[in-house]
Image 1 (cartoon, one colour):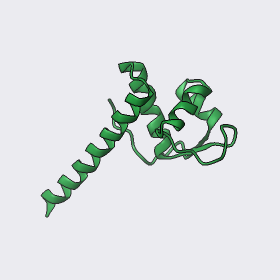
Image 2: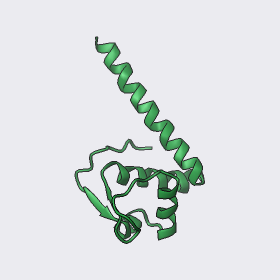
Image 3: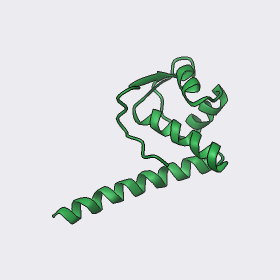
Image 4: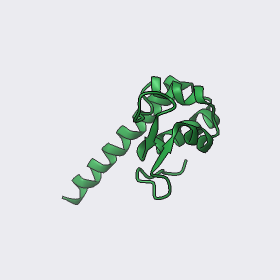
Length: 99
């Protein structure tokens, strides 16, 4: 799996409809990810939601996990949390090795 960058140079913000098109998914999929805490949009309803930076990256990773590994939404949430924890631990290890 390619490493995604948290700061997207091309996509700074997507509406919920744009995110659906970007990930090639339907509205229900995005809503389910929000309900499970995988994505954290700004706005009060699907029509008003905007997704920034890391949420766009997480959505693409979530789509790949579902498509390639067949994970359900709770599984996607767990894997993404574990990947982020691993990345944080790797950053801490790199800092400790340079001291």
